[in-house]
Length: 124
Image (cartoon, rainbow, N blue to C red; front, side, top):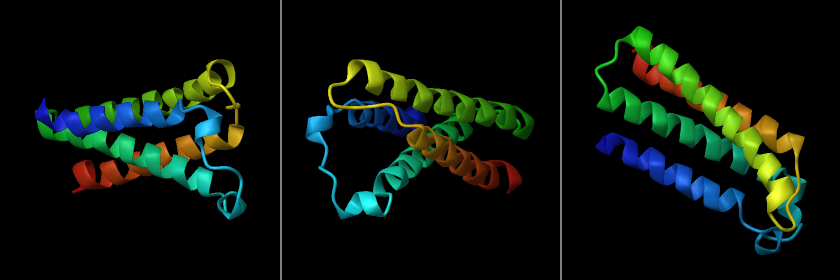
């Protein structure tokens, strides 16, 4: 169970960051020109998926076949979380909006986290 604490902490941090009101975020500047926001989403979700997969791999006695299924579920749930957070931002957070680009970045990040976890814990 102790191996899941980093994943839980990262999840809580992600929820906090994704639900900050728009007025608390940096205003448009040169960072938006390089797509910095999308890179943040990719990084956030790749780390989240990796931490969950790492915690699960370390804390369970699952076979590689069981880990494969569990890792895929982690990817699916994390992707669904990213999609849900866009709806939360649109409907419940002041000065935030729905952005399909963020969803794409979230899913891409989750896929990177899955691929790295797969290589690290299943293919080795």
